Length: 507
Image (cartoon, rainbow, N blue to C red; front, side, top):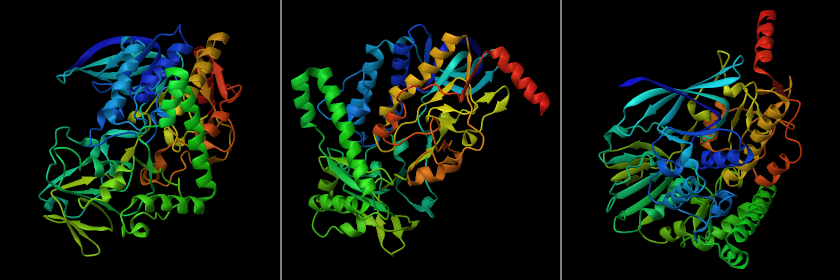
């Protein structure tokens, strides 16, 4: 039963205690030591993606020397790490830096309303305890930093499959995987060809609960590259320079190594195709049908590259207990899946690794003086501040580099805006895009989840400061020098309210 509760306030509220929100809270705490902060998390545990997803083998596709925080070295031997190790790293961060003092679990922000007169955000929050009992809370904030990720937590994407109700086995989406689910001895068909499917195939063939057979059923192939799970150069650098020095050196190495790899394959896609094919042929079993199952119709980095640590995905395919099928689904049947080719894949378990549903700001629709903000009509200032929305920053990471490499720059921008307001007696900062400025898509991926959400995403401009890049090296250049630009309009709350009233009266 829900009933009214308390009011709380903070100078800065960070929404979301996943890898971005935890890191943002520490960055902002360091940059703005005199400010009060709150870190709100809707679930009853931290970690975001790394706590929500529990499917077999859940791991990062990025190395943890760049995916981790620059202020906290990654100490584990595995550079490509599984979910439990990442959850431990995040828990250590919260404890080590005292973020548990500002963390509020079970706090779901339902709405956010800006008042120009108060120069404050009013966040309406539902607070639930572990038993499910709910209260409501109002939190006043001078500045909001949303670190809510880019997809819906409550729903994964599953297309309609004809005859699904006829299938007598289990159908599971990786986003909602029951942690204790027993698939031992089952015939498994995983629908999908992305990172999740590539991860699950070998994982489901390991251990005491191994499946009898796993088939990856794909409509369109993906590029898959093998990377070492343990970075031996990182171990040597750590031995040479110590934990912090070795971590910094490895981070630098990996940033440039990844950038050169992405740049080379993007600029010379035919070369990239040939090289990736060559690498895959070395790993795949003979007569594996590389031109059928591993020759995507798009260029490298039009979609994210799938990584398999130590080639474990290819090793699984060299066994008789795993295979890849490239075909289209006609319908589900009682015993499995009928393909358009006429072939039937028998299954006890079907996994719909068919992607996610993108969502900005965690589904929150902010209002500014009573007017709802349509995020898709907005432009992003340096990929972080939303046009027309006062005192609000959002974290978007990279599509062609580790997501969190962008975090420190976004936090520095937010801190600079707040410093500028404090130094000049302002309490309101609104990014205002120039009239008539040409715009372009925010993300440059052709992946289905991006294309499905295209109409709902904010956009970017064609020139600074209304641009972002999808690799760290290029985007980092956009954060050099002065971050405050004339397109951020600063004012006091009272003057802003008067200005809005005059504009409203004139219109």
